[in-house]
View 1: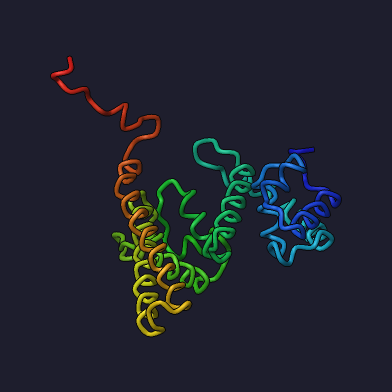
View 2: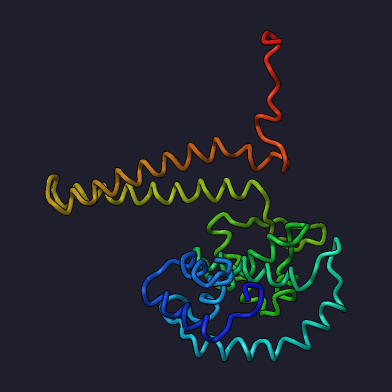
Length: 251
């Protein structure tokens, strides 16, 4: 059943698909499941190289057994804003965390970023994050340090002089530009290698090709980020065509 829990047989099919190096989307298609379900299943049970169907099945049963009484109490005692379904929100947060992990973020970093993304205010203090995620302040501090280094969050002092960690639209632009700059450093270093290894040698040619490729990518990313920046400041449901006014001399 596509909407139910994964069966042990489905987990075995996932393990076989991973062994054949199939992408998550293809495994999901064969099982008639959403890709996010397969991604989450694999990432929370060892990742693509360590996934084992039997261990994953037992771990899921243990989690369900531990969580059942807690989730029923939690959904009653902690009402969600805007009439949201608490279970649906928790499921979505888990999915988003898994996708962020698949993109390369460490688990705790992904959990912190998900928590900030799904908070209406878009900002939380370290103690609020620790309380929501039920982890130590040290874990939050380490995750925040990484996110700040990638320009994925920024900090501000509130009226009580506490650090608040913020995600906003502009950060996506800043993170993209930071990524392009990291490419620039690699381009420069690769070209240093060309001079050291000697022009027209196979190793130097390889490094020069890497530098040219990344140089082009970096320029393209920066140009696209500048062009797309307005999307971050456009209300949903409108496009640049909607907001553009016709020229007076065409009327």
